[in-house]
Length: 291
Image (cartoon, rainbow, N blue to C red):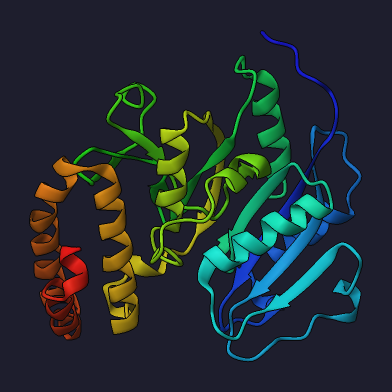
């Protein structure tokens, strides 16, 4: 087993909000506990960035208004991309080595950083660029997954991630990403701002040969798009556009197979949320689809 440099590596947590009171964000209580603790571990939470995409700003409690918490309001709703750009800049200023990405619906366990640090200490790889936990929506493991050359997502297994055509990917919430590695892949392709930001990040990591480590921690996350009835017309257009950018990044196999995927989604929503059919059909016949 390779020994590691015992220096402390600092973390900036970026919590992205949208039309949610700050105190109702599931992971904030855990973050504040981790911030106040002095624990003997390799990974230490140094700062929290609360990035609020709500139309109106929210107010931090007096107890949260400390030098270790930064609140940024963006009433234009820049999505997760705007939050991550802000986080990268702030992390550089405060000399944070890692970014912990979170959104308002993620429940973070108290031992999360300890588990991540233990796994990082055990690895024989000299440099890890991303630490990914297992993520559950209800009883279903939804992350990580493997992104195939056809653009489909298949269950993650250690035995299959060696396939050169498969990309280890994950939802961004709960992921620990090395700040320097994340900075190198920005800016992301135009049009990626909310949906598929996570898969775009991990696809870029894959192309650059970055090392991704999946560690044995399970976090809970409420994935809104799992319920078709919660998807608005605006959101389905964001999903379709983001997905197609990823398809084009994957290449011809994915592009040729994409119509089959689109028809499958169209049939699914025709039953579960028929109001999405017209915007989906308008999108597929729009000029942007054929660019």
